Length: 174
Image: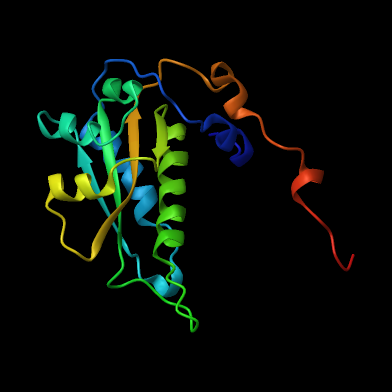
C-alpha cells in the first residue's frame, strides 16, 4: 500500500498505453472509487460511460484530435447530471465540481492498481453526446483514457513539474 503522497505522485497524464486489455473487474474497482466520492448534498450528479469495444470506441476517440488517444484500450466518458446537482443560493451549479472530485478519485485508484489515465477536456462534447445518444440533462464533461501505461511519471517531462508550495499558498492570521 502506498502512502497518499506516493499515490498522488504516481498519478500523471498518461499518453502512451500498452496494447493490453483491462479486465472488467479492474475497471469496476476504479469506478468504485469514483462512486464513493463526496458531492454537494450527496447528490452524486454523475454518470460514467465505459467504452471498450469497436466501433463505438473509435467513434468516441474521434471526438478528440490527438493521435495518442488511439492507443488507449478504454475511454470513460464522465458526464454531469445537471438535473440533480446542487445549486448554491446565487445559482452556482456544483455539478462540474462534484464530478471533478469523482474523476480525481477514479484517476488515483487507477494509479493505485497500476493503470494510467489522462483527463481530457478539449474534446467535442456535442459530438460525444450525439454518438452516445445522451439525454439533455447529461453533459459529457471529460473523457478519461484508461490502460496499462507504456511510460512512467518521470518520462512525461515538463508536464509533471509543480510549483513550489510558497508560490501557491499564502498564510493569513497565523
